[in-house]
Image (tube, rainbow, N blue to C red; front, top):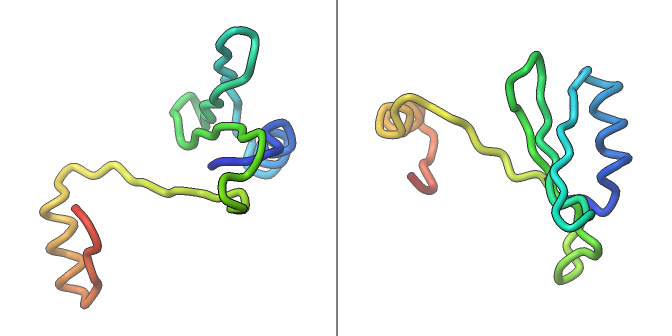
Length: 85
């Protein structure tokens, strides 16, 4: 997630899901936040001082799988479309 309000995002997701935040700083500035649920990382976000090219805050979802080829084959078998592997 990229957001102009990292503190607000931490509060929101902490209250909604019970997520815990691990703040990562460099030179005294917040640069990244690892978000954990039951000790496992499940989200990360970075603050943005301003939106790049007018883009709003956004999520970029990604998933870990044991076999990209296997999942791509399953998607195709279910009439889905694989955009990238």
